[in-house]
Amino acid sequence: MAMEHMILEQLASGRQYMYYYTLSTDFKDKYGDRTTASEFFPGRIVNIGTKDEDGKLTEIQICDKVWEYDDITRYKIDEERRVFQIADTKYSYDEDLHVCSDGETLRLSSLTELDEVRVVGIEKKILSVAVVSGHGELQLENTELFEGSYIQIGDKIFAEITANMNMEIPEGNYTVTVANDGYGGSKEITITRGETLTLDLDELKGEGPKYGDILFAVDVQGAKLKLDGKVIDYGEPVEIRYGRHYIEASASGYEDYSRILFVNSEEATILIELSGEDTITTAEQNSSSETAG
Image (cartoon, rainbow, N blue to C red; front, side, top):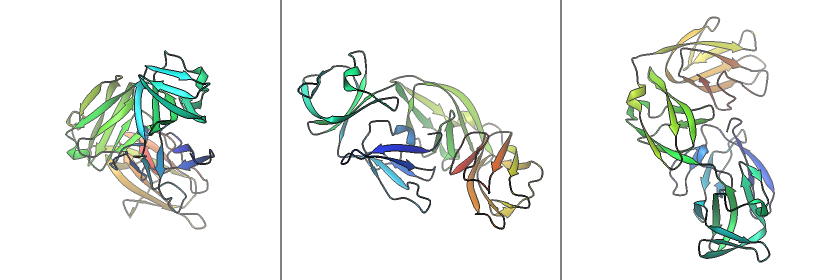
């Protein structure tokens, strides 16, 4: 997720392709509802949509034609007959069955009865098997103030906040940060496997409005920089209200630059590279937005 790309294997041909996405990519669950990139686990079957003019995915959805069984521990494998038995039900699989752990390809024979796996299939045929790490759920409450802005969970998970949203998150410790309309804050949370943690965003609202001192480092001298449509002087740190903003940079002879700026800290430096292919922020590398956090 840090590099905002995914590698997909086409079921029909077995060929692998790399696809890039952005915060604007519409991630959907199997029911067509919005979800996050963190729910696209290795081994899941997906349908891809169209690409934008930059070649990045505009939509991707978890396939609704397949079934998924999570955290399977009661299974047996007969490699000679290519039978994968889950509890009392037997399934077939092909010799090119996709087996993975933490994104790395495994041999089916390397699985043991101590492994918990996620199995994806269609009818009585298994398409993929993934050794899974634990995960829990994060349930957001009192989201009204922050809806339409973003939640940052650790270094890699960013998602647009919707009303009372629920997210599946890998187990572990995280710093959660939200910001919008001059309000926001952070909190340490622990996601426990198989459990749901409820987070009241009113607790992160804090006193407001808050502002961050943001220093813009533009690599082309004399470039023009706009914040929310207005030209700004960026020779010194710029005081910007917490929340979501829009930045544009331009210079003669260079391609125009535009990003969403998410301000959620007291100070940060944003590097804007008009002369290069990539943009690196103080928070992380991100092709569609910058996080001042």
